[in-house]
Image (cartoon, rainbow, N blue to C red):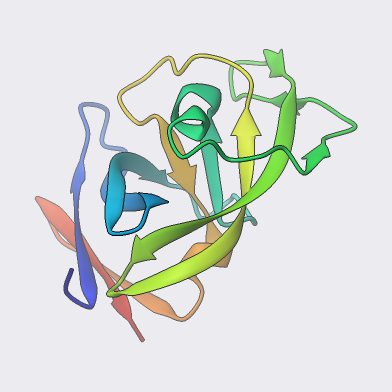
Length: 130
């Protein structure tokens, strides 16, 4: 992977980008992620993607999360690795105990985006190290 990530806009104009969840030695699971600068953590994935690398639950979240439509869901925390912007990075992962309702099965936030620039274009965008 190069030191930049090329993103695109979904059907509703939402910023989407691919990243690789490490599932084993030199094995990756490609995820489509919604870029959410309002999310202060690094990565949130749904439970079906968390099962692929057999990520262990480290903490059960005390409070449910609330989606934009007002529905709530239980979550838990774990740790894992992603291949992102040309490097392998460990980070805490929020696991959402629900099924995804849209094209992007996960989202990335500011913890993962820290130290990068987002260059917005008309048809696409690029995230690269600052």
